[in-house]
Length: 287
Image (cartoon, rainbow, N blue to C red; front, side, top):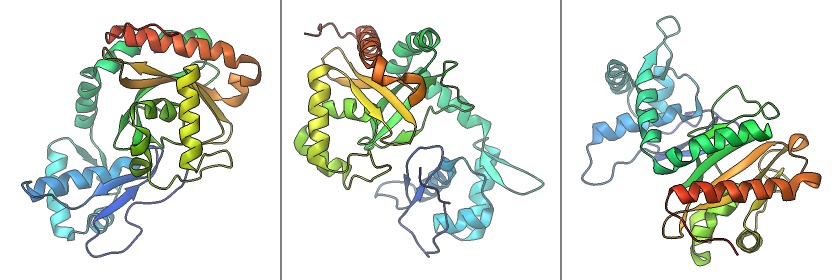
């Protein structure tokens, strides 16, 4: 994963910035407000997005990143703090995301039909296999995680719900691309960044990989986004047969042991995706 810090570039009025960290991939923060929107609200939202890398920020760094004056930044930060959207450390005077966002984020997850349909199923599967399980959707050209569960062979000390990963470098991304017409994929994805030697960086090769997912019903990723990581994913379909999301079984490559267990884990992924899809109204059987 590339590292970086929001606001490291000094520009007077940047139109956007890239936040990098637990989001998994660069997160674009648009500093321009489209017509018909309230400028102060847009600035406040842009400030919140600066924290997408999970790191605390100083007022001066926030002002520089947002391209606004420090006094304006201070007033907006005070407003966000009073609303519970930000917290301030009185000793170091650093800001971080506040508890109200946990409440709002939890509400957003709980109202998402795919999260509700998949949560218990994936939790049970993680316990059964001892590996990680995840569910994600396509959002703004990225894989957006809705939930993740860990088994003892794939532990984590943090949640990846809300993280964004690149579509072309992940097994779930290739499943999600089944819902995007081939002629639209290149424009949506742009340049395919290389994360490891195994990353697909050619759109023609990516389309072939997606066709293979459609043929066999699952996708595999070994070392494509992060070295030593592997996963097996399957698409989740909705009541119309469209792609509602994707689920994956993931963990260290040494835990998945795909050289011996790929068929077994693929069967689990396909069956689990179909179970989740049936909760969304998907009834078509696989051939």
